Image (cartoon, rainbow, N blue to C red; front, side):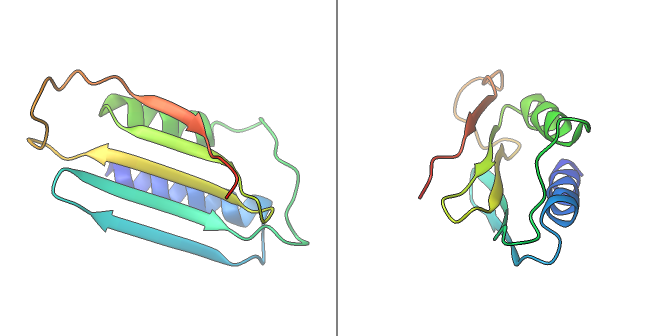
Length: 108
């Protein structure tokens, strides 16, 4: 359910801030983690970012609950990307108390 909500919010943001732009969704299921990415191309219809909603905050909170990682930010092409990595249950070799990390995306 967490992965679904992250994808849902990232796609909502793409429609809201970059309506009409090309948007790509990648879901990778690995042995130890689930990787999610939603990236839009920005373009002429990309609107300004605002802090009025709780979308990115909610994504960070969801990822943190599971000890994952979240990267969000503008891309070199002017688009915006959200990338999340969520550990799968029983996949860790250590403690399940892994702290969540968030970081801005680096331009390509």
